[in-house]
Length: 519
Image 1 (cartoon, rainbow, N blue to C red):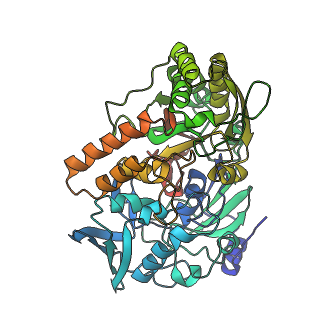
Image 2 (cartoon, rainbow, N blue to C red):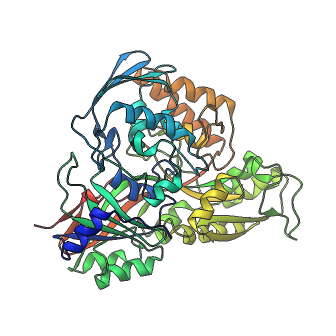
């Protein structure tokens, strides 16, 4: 357990036993760290985006707005000029300057032991020029038209607190100095985090003087906490509980179409796949998941409409790619794979597996309440085509690390796209390379040099029409290869007690500033 309690904050809490308003939130997954660069995932964002700000702010409809950057514009083909917001201070009182941004960009790709970092966000930047205290020039390795969008998730940290700091220093609170709407009071691993409002924040004053984020991975316990009044707001309520919460006047449900795709990552890197055997439990001499026909068979053996109807109870939409259908970057020529178990059996036979094989699918036990249930349903579908399937749920901290090391045959993940397809291409599909800052979230070991090259060309093309056409081509290429097995697009849900409203967003992490007192 890690705890931090600042003396001034402790005195304030002791002197004010009844703060004006406190919000208590129950969330489904605990963060792996307070370090905002350690893991690029929902559980981390729910904590760190309340403590740290970004240069470019994602609005609820996932468009860009000014954050710590007031303006940004290209001043040359390979140079972006960024003007920073004046009079912003860190929570220790020191001024925020362009040098902090330069430090952040230097630090983000090099955090040790990260299970999925931000190298892809800053990949085009070759040099950061600090023009003055509030002006930066980002020099890039070519045209970078999507740079602001790609950097919108990168939390800015201070040089004076972060230089030389380890992830443990952020967890202990020593380095957790932000410019965000709230400041850290106490972080208790896997239990809860306590926050207090940053009275010097540059944004609109939040309704809540303080907040507690409780980590409640059990869905029933999360709903019970809301029903009993232990918490004011919960994320990801179970689809089973939504009708009751929607019909009870004591509570309100808030929803919005989300950007997150749920998908399976089949391990194509290992020559002999872990957790894959013949029907007698003997290891196979070669990895069947390296065969495109096997991956295609597994994909078309999944009844996505049945999953979204019966398992997800219409809280998700089938998808055959990673961009949602309402996005301008969606490729209409890449359909949802048709459910065809007979063809799946033929493909397995053509690939040399007429009797199938055994496989284990691994999922996070704490990320989403429906992951394990959906995986069990998929396992039954695969078993019907001869691929006997078991499902194992693993606590997220261990799961994330093992999946990053490609220790599973098939793993289940979610990916929330930005407003263009390229960010996922760089992070999910491009060949993993620490030097090139690609493949940070490539959990399947997929590698296609032609797709890598097409991604590079697309993301350095200034003409919008040409760039979009190349990105659509890249989407088609990755999906034809079955680099991942896309399942469905989530709808985001939150539930609150009467008296609290929540501005539902296209992104699925929870911001305290989106919760308001009903007036």
